[in-house]
Image (cartoon, rainbow, N blue to C red; front, top):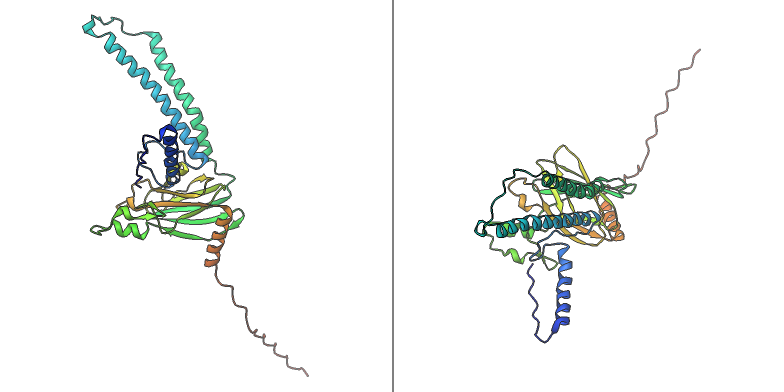
Length: 312
């Protein structure tokens, strides 16, 4: 997606520039829910509790690393400048210092414990798939996904379909196709190799449990906005969960090298309000329901038992 920078007159002043910047950021915010934006360098906060907790942990660890870097490289710079040989510095003769060694052993341990405690809570929360309100089974194939709606609440469903790279991207990616990848769009967004023929529909404000497996080789189901990725391994069932609060289209890709068309195995999740999702799912279920058995139009009377011959 290309975004043209806004031009401001020198007479606009700071207030006009601020308003213009706000407009640009507002434009980005809708697109960022589905596709990366130019110059995006950081992780996305995502649209789920899990993704936001992971983002917060990432930022906390990042700033810890920044502080460590400033201390370490600052000490190196001071030592190189202040105690260089050209200024007459003479190296000390001592071989070790117990206090310093204790500090640089204990402090890293404390830092790791401080980081590990909240990270462990996040991992436990990610593994807590209980109390889910619906279940979706995901199966990875070369090079497509199958989605099966197992249940919503106590109601079982049989809706399942295969989701693969959309036809426009597939035609464009062929060698010597002569088609422009930048022209492949979905709703105004550039979606080359990031769109599918059948997206996974999910309801908002609903805890959804995923059971993930593979049919042939190892795949990995990954949508960055949801905050996690899960391996799809043949013969093994992994599970995870999500609860999306914002309606929208969220895109991902297979994150495990799975063969020659690994790069052409996108994922699209479309989150819609509960009422809209229920209506869609019931319509899909009705479309695959077998026709009712025809009632018998006639009955065959059982033959009467033969009369016993009279005696005498």
